[in-house]
Length: 183
Picture 1 (cartoon, rainbow, N blue to C red):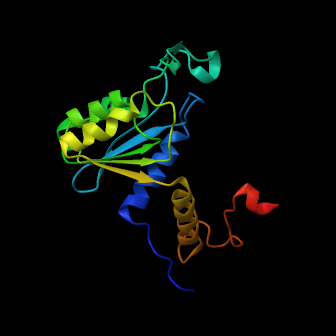
Picture 2 (cartoon, one colour):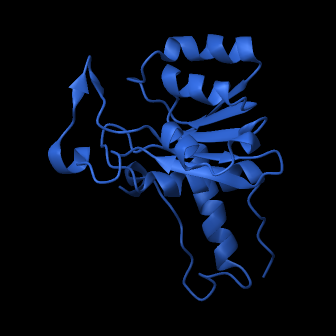
């Protein structure tokens, strides 16, 4: 059997962000952020959720102010709060599920990230019309990743694990399909 290709570094962090988002507790957007340093080492991650010990949106509903839920910290905020060494954020890359809102992009810019990769669009993000200007002023690369590309990456990861030495190597072929394609 041919050796399947490894994930690229960007693909690897896209999948990590997606897994972090599985812990999100606000169904307006299951989001997360992972931050890597200049050596491509994961230094922080966070998902959207209420502060520990407080009720979550999924349990008690949303706390809405001006059409935005304010019950949760955003994934970007939690990633920065969870980072043990904020000096390593400088020139790092944040991978975010959904486009960042302006307050979160501003916080990441303050810590001097060099790139914001975001997967998919969130149409209700606060101040998204200002994020591009902020990134341009600060020299931050803003990179959009289509969710369908992440699905291809998931398939690539499954294929890798179906190859020699993989966790799924003894299973029948696993193939992801969009529900619309199944019909």
